[in-house]
Length: 243
Image (cartoon, rainbow, N blue to C red):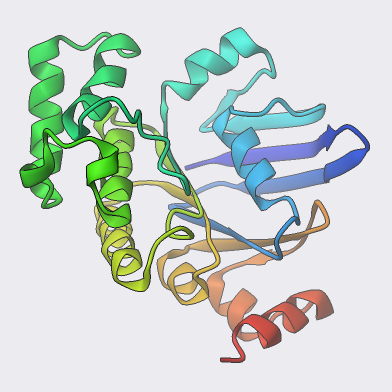
């Protein structure tokens, strides 16, 4: 996965969320974005995923420049698998339908092919008994595994995961993290925002630390977690890793 970001800025009203963010990764398999709440992690992730338009700057992903134009972003999003902390499942559809609907309506897959793809994923991730259940009948871990299955089903260039375990109890958190680790081991490309620092260290090839809209440190996980150079990063890890 190649990412080239130059001078990215994004504001919401008076709030300058991303401040001249630049980043270049030539061969990154798994990028993890960490930092304090409100620092700009999710906004940066959403810009990379094509869900937000930057106010200025340049974004190139896998050699393709991403224009901040809604028509082009709509096409770009078809190649990005997305998983959110709130699942974003359609409440009126079954687990199966939540996966087949985007395959058929967005990607133009025949119904039979979409069903086969969905059933294979539901079976693989121990969800076959829940095929015809709606989200309200499922646990948080089951809903998030269905959301992950939906993201994988489109065969994306990469997956973006925004705090995928933040709404889950510890047992269900482990289920979802195991699934993400399995995907990582299968060479799926990942961009992940998480507060699970142990998992972030384990799954990442490269880590960026963002605070107040600025990337203040970046590097391999061993450097960022074991020997951070910036005092804000050291203070953050001293606090969150204390217990």
